[in-house]
Image: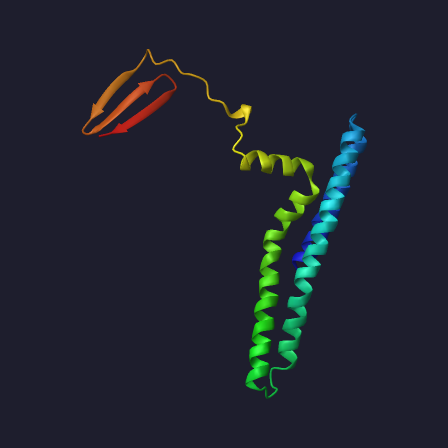
Length: 155
């Protein structure tokens, strides 16, 4: 089921980006984005197929051999295979991160900036005017009122 959703939404995202690229003046930028989206969708679909098929095969095998008499060795081997297949299926949840990091230079750059703790300039806070503070004391709580801002100190 997730594969069906992935293909469905991937296709319509691709069609939408293609239509946007035809309507704007920055055609080269949209072509680059279109290529990136195409490679990300194809890679994500392949990862989904590779991680889902073994689970489906193991689930089918378990259903077929449910009523068979099995030795303890075979039961242990099937349990081991089941755990490995489920681990592979769980890895599909983390796979989009690795696909995007490996295929998208913009996402890779942003991730490296976060890892290196670089600060972004668009999140700066300006100074505020502290001359018009009107303190109000209510019990043990002090409320400092600044025009358009309120700061609460609990003692």
